[in-house]
Image 1 (spheres, rainbow, N blue to C red):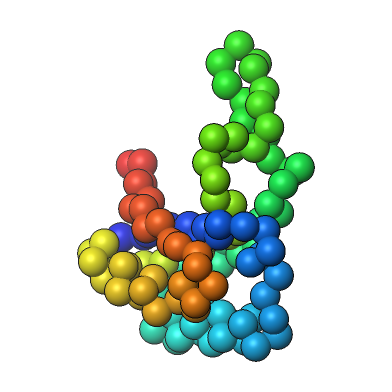
Image 2: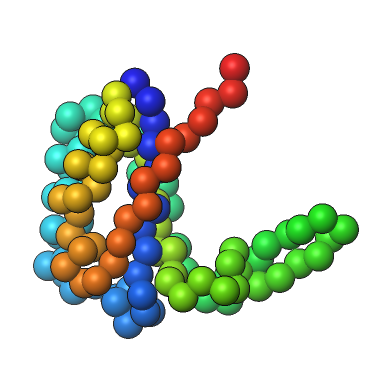
Length: 113
């Protein structure tokens, strides 16, 4: 099986404060993945949206945040195990983040031999 990172993004920080019901729905979604033995890493499921990220570039140039030009906030990630990216996308499609206008990027995690 391959591993895929699901990177969760929101458009505004106001979407970052989920209700208890939304948190439970997300936990149920994660539990469903775990019950299939497809959850490889729960990751840092919540990442702060501002003032705590820096990017270090060549020559020790440091800038705020990972991408100062993006208009979305990365709110978290998990790593799942599936055979194909299509299967990973299908799992991602059932995440409740879409109900609040968020989106998910699916990326294959490359392994070094």
